[in-house]
Length: 314
Image 1: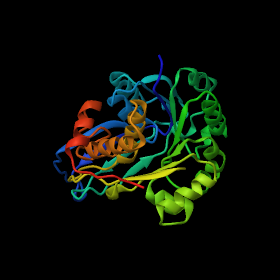
Image 2 (image 1 turned 60 degrees about the vertical axis):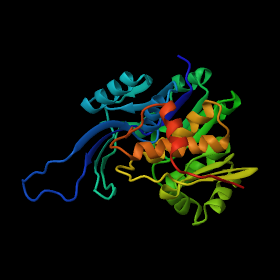
Image 3 (image 1 turned 135 degrees about the horizontal axis):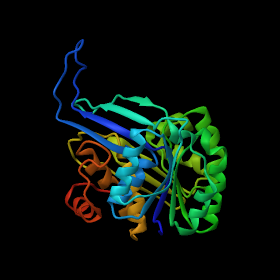
């Protein structure tokens, strides 16, 4: 089918436990309110949220030949996400993360590396560009891409496909990969912490400028409790975070990316697309797991209009 968004890269199954104030002593146990399983990751979470927002989303990644992989595929399929490019790699388990969410929202985690970081960019992924409007690259620094990321994004832009990029964590490999990826990226979407680590500055505007000198067309910087900042060649737009009591912020970054792309796909201008992305992340933060309290595109529009958040356009 035709795709509004193809997300490529990290795909995990998140096991989220809420709330966890402390670990049980010895072999004792605790009763918690919720344990939620959901597809997640810079690619998996973005595709899952985008589909919930009404986009036709696809996922290009890999899972292991194990129950976690079967569960991820079944949850994607049930949501309507195109899994034709989700491969099975029997050599690796499915990437899995366990997140004990503390009552204050902190989210320490245990992560098992798995198949998605070794997923190759196959000829079928390149062929899918012919039916895709936007590509979100979430495999920065991953060994499976084997340098194919820049080729994929270059071809995508040549076809008029909108390209965006996010990463899971700063590293030397990620830094080197960005040098070849950014010239083919319309919008780079790092967190403020990643800006500090990768650009060597606490100033998000300065950091965005450094990424744009390296080739990025623009930057959307996720700033947690301070909202988000969109920096384009001709303007800067800042939208503060919504005034909410967050429950689980694990997937807020991925959901903000998905929300911005969804708003852009639906024809919103950059200001409203950014506002929509911030509203998407806020609804995700109100619940547990990748989707949190997110319901639909229309309810997010209503939330965006009813909840206090004022943008600065300068």
